[in-house]
Image 1 (cartoon, rainbow, N blue to C red):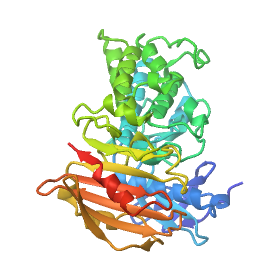
Image 2 (spheres, one colour):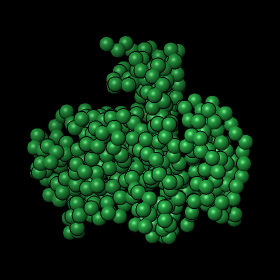
Image 3 (cartoon, rainbow, N blue to C red):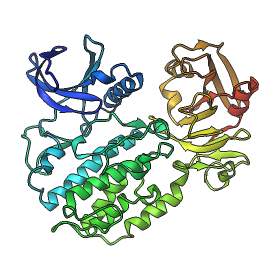
Image 4 (spheres, rainbow, N blue to C red):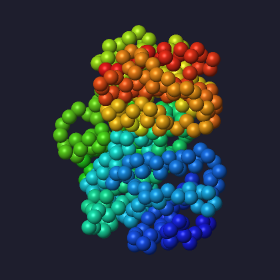
Length: 454
């Protein structure tokens, strides 16, 4: 049994809203504002696990940064007397999709419209480089639109809110960094493999499974079987859901926005190429954005920057990086928009194994107009590391500001943060390097000399 606290911070606790594996959520009341809030508290049995605690705090940072009406808003972050962190969020007074599905089925048309709204909410995450990884009915909430009250049919009045980003990861970290996580029935097959790449298409699968729950005949569909839709659902929606829940990620839509657009086409009745064929075409053009690629593959991508032997180009053709001997490459992702690349002897392991060297490169077209190389490097988290002398270097037309760090708490022997700019331009290139142990000091400069920007 969970004992209800009388207060959390300045909020009076009224009742329990939910209990999860890692946290408990309470309904609190702010007497000064006369408003209710949802307060998420890290579970006591996980309070001393630094990884879980950091994941909890990551959720707060993600929500604060997003600040979008389609994603649950965060108001404050606090800490209980026993040291457990808590997150104060906007309360979605309309409850969850899980609760609504326990009652009478939604009419077909509102159910399709609801799925479209859920796709739009997840698209906000994808636009910011975030993979949710646990899209379930319990994580879809409803808040009344201004001037209305919660409505039994959400498409009529309620605003859909995506919640519980506790399993979400920035795409830069999602590939291979986190262990198996998700909810059976909604979790993409690749999430069962701790070494698999988990990207936006895992969320597309979850959205497809939500669509099955909303629109398919109850008990009438299992993965790999034909989709049997309820009466009143446009027939072409079945093809959309089948594509979204394809077992192979390459056969799904690339992200939530594309899934939403396919739903629009299916419900509008326009005759176009089938979603499976379109997904396959997009996959052929965009595989470089999600797959490990060999050095020789630079000839097949990068229509704008010319390919160079032993170098890799991002899918947009804007950023090129020469690959050190014995290393491989793959397209990378970050929480900030812009092309990115990862090179390492083992690209899937280097973000989670401090013994594996590697490098991450990212391009911003307007970065130099928003900050300076010095400020950018100063904002990087290298607390606890021993600092090395800052230096500058000019390589391949870029002026580099380079800061080094040694003996870091995470076990890395050395980390180098380098920011390159072009004179009179707003382009900014960020490169983080974990050099091989015992490598020559010139290793970093050689790698930076191999960077090319369109």
